[in-house]
Length: 298
Image (cartoon, rainbow, N blue to C red):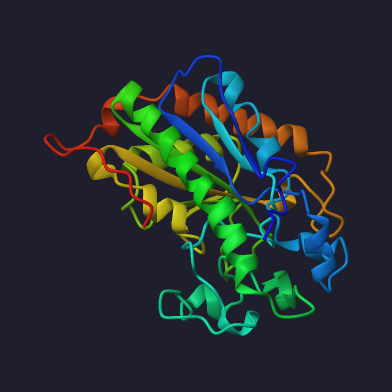
């Protein structure tokens, strides 16, 4: 099956002129290049299909390469392929052929309709008119997912080779959260899998920047970090991963998906964060002595 992106890039790496810090910013869910073939397969209109996007997150973090750190960003949309899942996390009801035991068909994410190939977008709206062929999943996973993760591993390896440590900042947005009892809803959620995927000082620094700008920050609730965070975050080996969720109401209209008047102000806050991370003391990120670096996409 010919790739839906045979004539255009499915993703890109925007590199700095000079790498000034061991950081990689990853925006895997902000892609908005919808293939015509995919749109013909969906029952949703052009606005509904975009409900799963982390819209404009790549633009919020766009200053990273100018400041010295690469930005890896998807052009393919999350509704088409989710690289923040296991590679073969698939719902068997979506496919014409039966799925063998090699596929993960029973995860909570599959049950929610949000596997590597999603079954639904936000509010549980089904994406497809008809069931897919397994070749479609292979085309997306072998042709886009695997190269995407290979690129991420390469960029982290380059950072580690240059600085002796590496940091993945996994960049996302979230729907506006409801308040919990007497507590106001957070504007930012930092996910480090409850302290297991990065040095505590890294998350502390990010929280300090956001709270210093007047934003409310939560840790790991309701988003503790997805596949990329838990796969690449190995602080015992000097490889750190932190997921950042930015509430969409801060910078866009969640109904029309248009940037709001506050977009520039939020982008300036993100730039402050990038500058703080680039300037951080790398000694707090060092690996445990005698333990080598390891990159493995599980």
